[in-house]
Image (tube, rainbow, N blue to C red; front, top):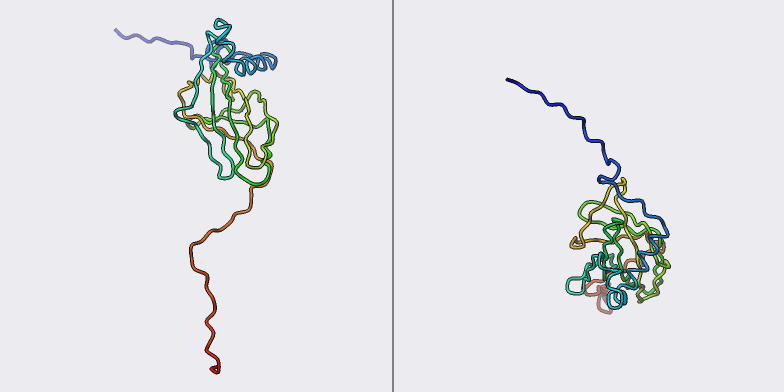
Length: 187
């Protein structure tokens, strides 16, 4: 006896299955505010943050180094119902000139996938030899699916730089070369 079973192919990202929830800008602002106030809320209103995943990278910092500046993720928060991650990051400028970047251009790399920001709280500048704290969020995937990103990932943060990088300086250990001159009286 032979049997043939036919099934309809699954439709990509059916409603409610694998699709990222619609998160309004107002809700994203509320999530950023909740992340900023997390220590206070955890101490005084623990029920309000009971479903928030949280990690700090004190022991093993996640640093994206770009020679003259670096971005270090200090804290990460996961709001599962909204499929949104919020990051607190420090941008350190190592140069003698201000670092100017596009504040709405943060992106998160996890493995070989790139996730653009959904919202950020950043002013776009870091003073010379200074540091700036920024918050940004990532919601879903670029194609509308859920990101389901774990806070245990080794993330890299990217941002579009607007100020020119400082000029390259060449440092050498070679001795300086002086022309050899013939002794006096010789051609």
